[in-house]
Image (tube, rainbow, N blue to C red; front, top):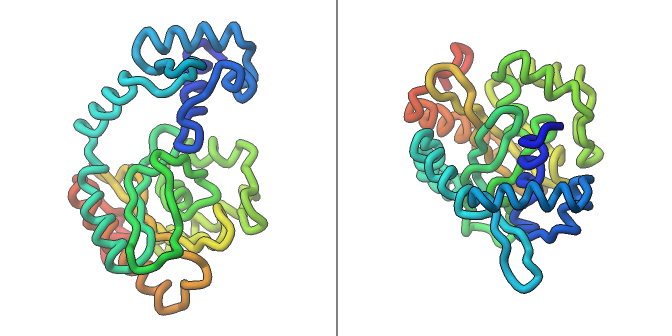
Length: 256
């Protein structure tokens, strides 16, 4: 692993659940020695990608990352375009709705909305990384991704998040074929126990898949009537977002 890869792997350790991390913990989680971690974090701090705060000098994401995030949003405004649709869909269906965006070989939450209809709901994290094989969003994206990405994802060890998570590459490939035929992906307890989700792909700049729109609800609330509404609504809204992103649905998805 090169220096750049090591530095980026340290940045990926930060999340909503651990926004601040100390040197010792960074060393433990990364498997790198403290001297290496200190040197890499010092380089990142010099460019504003991380900063140290408090008496214990914990590290957190710095303003340099924020500037890049703003630039990304300005040039590829999927979040801005999707927000209105995500909120509207959450209110229409009464369940948690979110859009995820693919970047390289990763998929992460871009924006989400909750419905006030129920006290119990599926919760999300900002920029939460979503495994391709275990989520409806990931499966929707993978179905329409280039063969090289599919092969790369399925050649790696796949984390079995729950007893329902698919980890057999051949089983996943079969499921991708079914998703392609019907136009949406579905996961029941694949990523999180007792969560039922459906997702449809979003395309930008032609027929390039850039992310997915998904609805997630507690399993106990998803009867056949709600499931049918979720599937129809997520496909319709995904088409609308795709149009706004100057995308083009594959022929098989070009009509409801």
